Image (cartoon, rainbow, N blue to C red):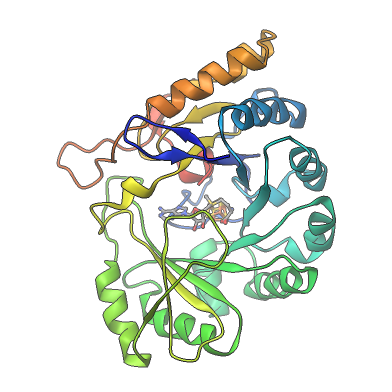
Length: 334
Ligand code: SAM
Ligand code: SF4
């Protein structure tokens, strides 16, 4: 299956499914310290509802699913959902993005349910700094979670680091060094603005700094669907990837994805406010053809590119009982 063609010549074959807006951490770039107003449980899609939507997207051309959140592992019985989605005709791969804190407990069960691989978010290798960035949680649990994923055969394990100037950018070389002896696939992500701020460290600057360790050799990506460009340090076991939503003008031309929020909205672009509500039709007994039609509508409405660096940029918003507020990454399903 080659995916659903959008109006800009891209092939859309990848769906990120947020299974919850809840999280056990409060990463400073993702959520305010007090957290965000949580969706009532009644608004969050059941696993059966997620299954119906995934069936419709598979019919439309989606073949790869990534579960995310919030923190997906705080939702009960996640392996059951993995097993349900793996059985959908047309779905070739179900993967997970997690903060890793609960992975030791669940890695084996997730693998047995059919999960293929995990991406783990880790922004520092220093315990005190980990607490400063996440406001909760311990670094050792995440490192143990990475090991548990490896032991369970969830390959390749990718480590996502959001680079923040003055916060953790002094650890970029330490993360790069981790790829030399271990099979870590580290991806440096430019911090995206969710409050209008743009304080990202451009990838070109990172590449120059990492060049001190050796010449970066371009690599074929380790298995995956993402927009990262991959490299390897000479003789290294793992790889180094760069995700460049802000510094690379053609970044969006490689976008192959849709996002489904925990409350059932299909989002054609992370950085656009446009969403298509699938929960209401679903709860009004819409059948597969109608859901598929809405999925194709979302594909067709994917914008050519985001507008984050333009003066009149808009940031993700959600309209709720409290009025219009910034919608955070944890609510969209990053
Ligand atoms: N809780 C899980 C985790 O942390 O991996 C999954 C959800 S989290 C929203 C998904 C990804 O979004 C993480 O890799 C996180 O680092 C990234 N993310 C969140 N806010 C971001 C921001 N402002 N800029 C870039 N990446 C961000
Ligand atoms: Fe939670 Fe992930 Fe957001 Fe951190 S990045 S607050 S772990 S959802």
